[in-house]
Image 1 (cartoon, rainbow, N blue to C red):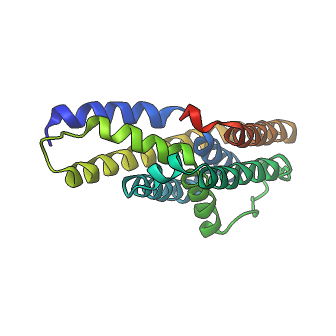
Image 2 (spheres, one colour):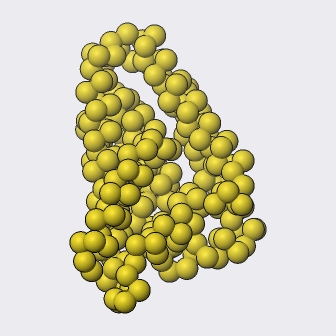
Length: 208
């Protein structure tokens, strides 16, 4: 693979992952609620989720989803329902004083699982990867090595982006000192997640 084929993909990927979506909203929500200590956990969940979505796409699941309205709808509803569930949970999250240790949702494995599910259970991502990656493949070279490089590049960018959002949100959390502001932050983030879930549920296959 030449630099001329890789660089445009890298630039496009960097721009795409920087655009806030459901995954970024979840990462920011956890960082605001728990600080920096779970930044790596959410980053790992995002990386694993993107790896699953991209690998499934490259194995042909994206084509199946594009062709099967039933399968597409099922996965879409599962992902949308999960986003709405997380949004409601964040909306109802208890508010704690800044000096009080946050002991809720302390299992790292659960946080990784949440970030993974939000990232992986997104049929738009799977179909997007099927449409996006081939645009940068050199037809005169072996496809598999190129796919491996592209997938690794995208996952690294996505993980770095999630970690950066988490660290920025954790730093902003220090400025949030009173319960009223914390409640506004939780409910804003929860509303955005619920909105993302409703949007995913309403999204039409023809828009892919």
